[in-house]
Length: 213
Image (cartoon, one colour):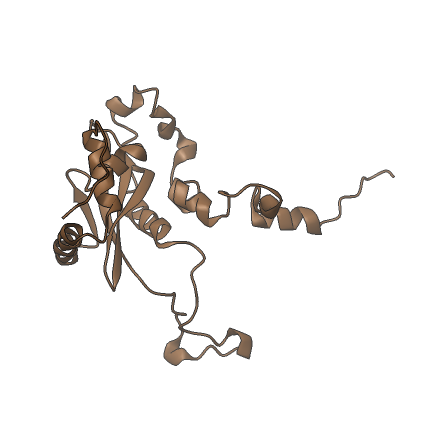
């Protein structure tokens, strides 16, 4: 079963997080296999009553109070296939690839995007990984109801009620979206990632000349 480090006092959340770290133990692999079977029988987007990983959910901002919702999302694990008929691109040979294309963003951001489109009245706060098998990856998305009084009256979270916070997941503003944009690094190797790759390219390419010179 689990072999946990010997510590003096371990709280409940610390115990759960240590269990999730030992992913190759027999008991954990059995649990994950049973859970994965259950997830495959359910729809791709499914609301859960309580988070599967309560310690991780709290780390990303979840609170067990009114206004917080958790959705489980299933995303297929594969490279992006080019949507062309019979694999015919009708273009230059450099663009003739169909199956070996790699999507620029990670699957966690895809999961956030899907549930964000499905539940347009909610706001995506954050997400985390919960399971995977050979065909799918499963994520849980923490969402907020911006119209709930428990959220609007809470100064810790009511920043998410602003109109400018609509669909953060579609604009790369969540944690996994910022990671896909290359904003997690610092130093001279990441200068071109800020404020964005396109903005840096545009600034470096254009020539700005004063009218009177």
